[in-house]
Structure formats: structure tokens, C-alpha cells
Amino acid sequence: MKQDVLPRMRDLVEVLYREIPSGVGSKGKIRLGPGDEKKVLLSGARWAVENGYGDAADLDHIESRGSIEGADPSLISSKAYERGRAQQGTLGSGNHFLEIQYIDEIYDAGAANSLGLYEGQVTIMIHTGSRGFGHQVCTDFLEVMERAARKYGITLFDKELACAPFSSPEARDYLSAMRAAANYAWANRQCIMHWTREAFLKELGASPRELGMELIYDVAHNIAKIEEHTVDGQKKKLVVHRKGATRAFPPGHPELPAVYRELGQPVLIPGDMGRASYLLLGTQKAMDETFGSTCHGAGRVMSRHQAIRRAKGRAIWREMADKGIIVRSAGRETLAEEMSEAYKDIANVVDVVHKAGISRKVARLRPMGVVKG
Image (tube, rainbow, N blue to C red; front, side, top):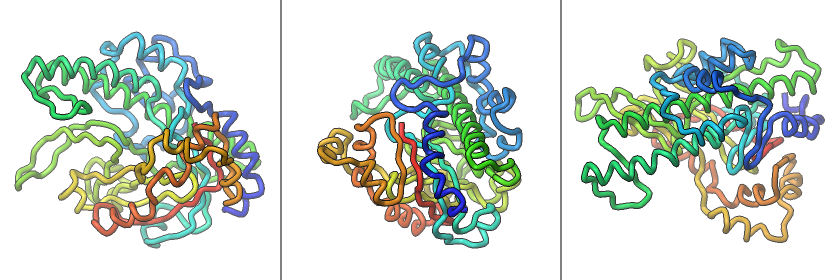
């Protein structure tokens, strides 16, 4: 409960900051040898569990059970391997975070009860991905895609776009490399979650049963997946690319684990570090209208440079402390870039999602302690 951890919040934030490396170029406690690197890319979160980072039961609460088939480690560049070798189990920088929260409002009591959630309950939210490894995979294949567009006579009207025909070798190679990056990300979050549990057990002097820190859901937020959807009354296989978006599959969907089959998929929409985050559930309307997708976060209203200029002369950590939120960051500029006013109000964004019917609100989670990259 909130009252149990609030007096220890500063200590908890400090130990999490110490135990889970964050910031640009941060290096973790795990050092992957050549053999392990390939196992991570093929097995994802399963590799983490098999190596003692978490429980097998966690896998039932992860999208694709934390491992997507079709990854090909042979397509990964030596530079990507080099960047990923020391970053497994690290939070990273930018908008990545580890946040200690509490549930301050329940919107759907029945759904919350099914998820084991209640007002005043302490929760942890982790937002990170495939780190420098995934970034390098993307960088490598952007060059491949640019050449492919010229090769296949594809005209792109925006420099930010890149593509290749699905049946082309370039596209097949990209999908296989991207799946490797997705598996790296699932393993990364699994390791961070494991160390978070250990930190809470140690600091609070609780047993695992007393702590009751169980994974609700781990969902990807930048991935392309082959899925079946109904288009113009016909079922078709499509490549659905969710960039800054997450799945929002409805009750009854065969890809959902048995525990959520009747409820619908848990949807996580994080806000900025000074306001709130939300837990929702996927709906049939999302399948009908948005290819089973919803947003992933509020979205910025200021660039990072604008935010840094706006924060000049201010102590963002102190402003957060005045709100009762303890923040630890690898750098002062990170807090400036991530201050609340740099983002849209998450409450407004979630209300739109809820009223549109593509996800339904279950609970609001308020921050108490934040570790930023």
C-alpha cells in the first residue's frame, strides 16, 4: 500500500537508481558473450527467465510470451552487437523511466478486481526498449531501405519514410533483424523487472508472498507484426507497424493469454513524470477501427531543445519534490527535456482513447518516485 512505501520512497528510488543503470551509453551488470548474445536475440524474455531473471509465470503476461519467432542473429551488424553487448539490463536515456506509482482512481471495479488492482496499491511501471542495439539495427536497415526504394522504383514523399516490398529480400531481412531487436527489448525489461523486485524485497524486508509484485503485462510499443485483420469484410494477413503505439486486442482474441482471454488485453499508457499513467483494456472496436491498436503515451508539445531552454534557471527535481515526487536522473538536462509541460496532458489523451472506444479505462496511477535515464 501507498502508506507502507511512502516513508521509504527516497531510499527506494536511490537503490533502484544504483541497481538499474540509466543514462546515455549506460552499461549493465550483464556481460553477454557471443553465444549468449544470439540466445537473447532468439529467445527474448525466455532467455532472461532461464538465467534466473524472473519466473516462468512472467512469460504468460508478456506480449508474444516475450519472444517472437523468425529472428535471425546472422543479419545483425558487428556494430549492433557491440552496442548491445553491455546494455542488457539497462534503462537508457530520454523518455525511458522506472516509476513507483500508486493507484489513485479505479474506473472499472470489476476489471480492476480481475487484474488484482485496488485503490492505494503500489505499482511499478517500466518504460524502455532495445537500447543502442535496436537503434543500430534501425540505422543499418534505413540505408538498406533507401537503396531498396530506388531499386524498386518507389517514390517517397517524405524523407522520414522508408519501405521495401514485403516479398523482397530487403524486407524479409529487416523483419528478421527487427524481431531480434524486439527479443532483446523483452529480455531487457524482464531483467530490469527482476532487479526491481529484488530491490523492493531488500529495502522493505518483505517475503515474495508479502510483496506480491506480479507482472500485469509487458507490451511492445515500436514493432511490426504480421497479424490477421478484417478489411472490407475479408480476413487478410497484414503487416501492422505500431510506432509509438501498442496492441489493444479485445476479449476472446486467440493471441491473449488464458488469464486475460475473457477480459481483454491490458493496455499501458504512460504519462509524464509529474502527472499520471493509465491502465486500460483492449476492445473489439480497436480491432474494427485501428487494427487492434491504441496510443502509447501523451506525445510532446515541445522539442527537447525547447524544453531545455524553458527550464533554464529552474530546478526541476525540486519542483517535483514539492509535488511529493522523488526523482533521480543521470543528468540535469534529462529532467528538463522530460518536464511535465513538455508533454500533452495524458488525462486528455486517455479520455479521447476511452471515448473513441479503442481502449477502456480501468485505473489511474500517480507517480511517487521516478528514475529517469
